Amino acid sequence: MDRRSILKHAGIAGVLAAGAAPAVRAQAALRWRLASAFPKSLDTIFGSAEKMAQTVHDLSGGKFEISVHAAGELMPAFGVVDALQNSTIEMAQTAPYYHTGKDPIFAFGCAVPFGLTARQMDSWMEHGNGRKLLDAFYANFNIKSFSAGNTGTQMGGWYRKEIKTVADLKGLKMRMGGGLFGEAMAKLGVVPQNMPAGEVYQALEKGTLDAVEFVGPYDDEKLGFAKVAPFYYYPGWWEGGAELEFFVNQKALAALSPENKAILEAATKVAARDMTAKYDAVNPVALKRLVANKTQLKPFSKELMDAGFKASMEVFAEHEAKSPEFKKIHQDMRAFQRDQLLWTRFSEFRYDSYMTTVKV
Image (cartoon, rainbow, N blue to C red; front, side):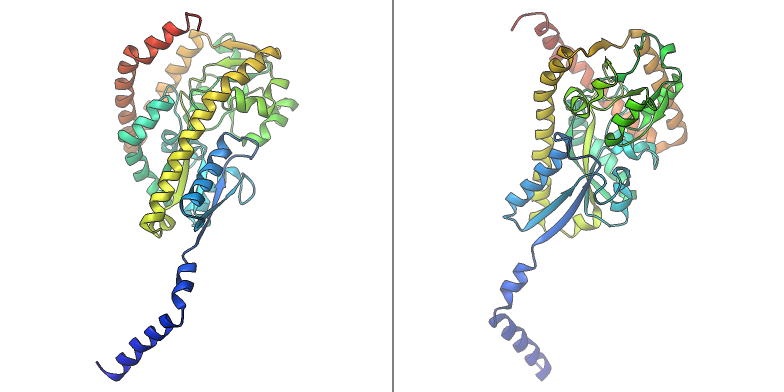
């Protein structure tokens, strides 16, 4: 060894002996920011982000902290993908179909008309090709995805007037979450309006909106839609199950230690399961309250459902003709769905159909 090398190594040894190691360990504490596309009042959805962050904190012994910010605190609800792409934040919670203005493929990460139920979506994403195909797409936006939970099959929305036929939809100004549903409804004469949940009640009250679809009884009751739109339709054929996602900045994720990556992934799974389970617990109770308070609960007619299906298939065909990637993901999802529907015929559908006919 030459003299400089000896001094170099001696210097490092001296620093370590002087107690620098604890300072190095202290710097390992990690702080991330998560921007949600939802308000705090939606304790089911926003609560999923809080549950995830708390689980990360607990599993890491407080060394990995994620601060959770409601829509509008750090950026507008629909601005989270841009923020992730630009590395302004490390993480977001959103409904991917909010971002179909960037590319219609985003819809497959949340819900498409006549698509998958919550269980089917979970299965496709985690044990089919869903997550793999969508993460390859999200990589264009510097994003890796994890499930934040699923709402389950949604309701068909609130209307200021009765919707008896397809003709009743013509000219209807309706708030919808985004995605391909708006294109299908436009074919039926609806004028789609995309706006954050927090702005909808006032627009509906003033009459600048004629109808709104959001999630289901529990959240819809909280947002007060029943006060200004008495007719509540079902089912939401555009959201057989709506997946919410945690989007993570790829660079931030790559910088995590293996331990923190495992903690983050485990925490998202805890939060996702909790959200879906909570919706199943609170929705029937809320629905009974709404009906007791004079909400007029009505099914969509078969005529309207058939028209919606036809319009939706036209929308899918149009996008497939323009985008090979869209076609690849759509066709994979439909193939998976066919197998799921086959199995459901012999399992839950038959079982649930019987159980609804008997007193328990």
